[in-house]
Length: 402
Image 1: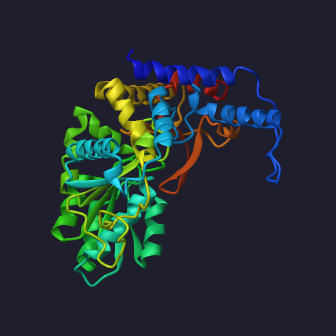
Image 2: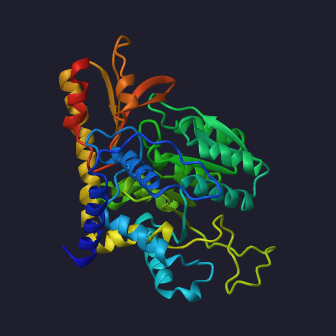
Image 3: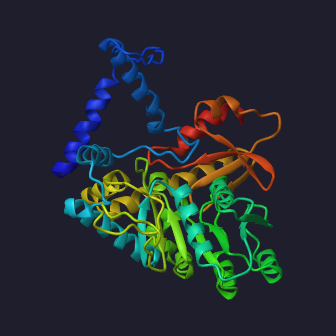
């Protein structure tokens, strides 16, 4: 264990000590002219910290909100203490070097040319479609995507004055290449949005055919890999990600699948980012680029960098594989013990549908599972986003329903 690991562990242990005492029921402090009593403030802070501990439970599998490593926690503290603004990178050479090092690394992984950090794929999807609109050479305002396309894409279309059109999918919400080809032949879109890791069941659109269709019609191809992008780190998935190199833009959220604190997202491009021609920011040394983020600093990436540097990429790969193995194990246990309909994706999400007389709402409320819709059918959803989530613990919690 190196000194950085030790600092992170000590910080985590200190928080654990604070939480050792059972948190009491508290009320939200009232904002007023005078400060709140120290004991009341401490009690509320302890309760707030305790509230977030559900992500560290063996049975937490409701959403893409992972437990945070001690190194990443330390990185977040350092980023807050540093508080540099990289719109003026000349003042923060070390922080700027870290940013460029990470961007270069991600570009090599996803086979893209340019990129920058974002607060998450909601912002990245908006910016990517903004660039798609600016580079559009077709007489159209249409964006194509599946019914499982993340809602942020529809939101982005509304903001940009574009029209989102759903393309038919298969039974697991993967876009149908034949339907996509037919739609493109009738009206060429500004962009086609594909997904690596749909929100509901973690599925992956057929990239080979769909990217080829996008390239054939000279439409911008954006890949939303917010959840499934972590697979790009694994050699066994390189065939899948070879098609990403032909996309115009890719978004990925380490705060979902690499156990990082929010905000930590990245947007990568195949073409250079252009300066904002109409922007007059003469108080800045560097002319602002055509990106959404304004002021930002290490809060977007320092936790990730410290985690990688302290533990190495092999450790991150091991954590990803552990999550996928637990997902496989959970699906196998369900198949062994039940006749329920089960679907497992390659990205670590297991969906299942028990008989109608089985109500798991009590477990949903506790954060074990969530509800989702796949091809208009409601299912229970199990998200293996944390390396602490254990298949055996989830199966045990379900056993009384078998």
